[in-house]
Length: 114
Length: 113
Image 1 (tube, rainbow over the protein chains, first blue to last red):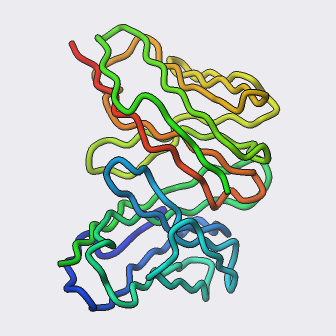
Image 2: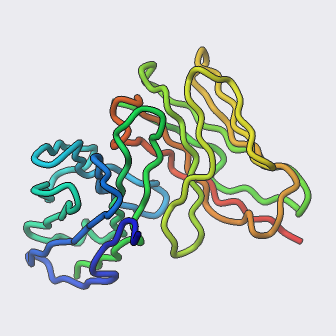
């Protein structure tokens, strides 16, 4: 199993550009989430999904869109990049059944917006 | 929503000493409290977790304690080793929403020889 994979590893965007961060998991997890990590601020939840076709906003959703058309994939779209979106982005997945709540994180995408 | 505070932000201990990191949470509905370790440039990885029906859990040199009345939980690392040096994050969530963890701001632990 590859676990949780993310592409790209690094990305530089200009202000106003759009892009999609890809996330995929092969563990058949129902739950998937996107977090951003900024120095001194821990990880903050952007959007999450409890299953295909179901998404909801987290703590910092502005400027980001998500969709969940399959169990495996959960892409994060930046609509019009801003310097404030410079961050490291982590995708995570977890099993929805009782007894196991561990979130498995992907390797991260380091995004710089100039 | 949930708010998690974590202290200290940095912690330096000598090899072999113990380290304690403390977190408080605000939402009384939270009942799942994981701890993640993140090495430089790597992804966070779960090291231990506790649910609200227990007060303490141990795994070798690592232990977590939970006080639901006071809404705080702590990570204890005994006999620290240089490979314990990393950033540690606490988090909290109601188990019905395991996909939406609220994290603390992290503790950078440095274990010196």
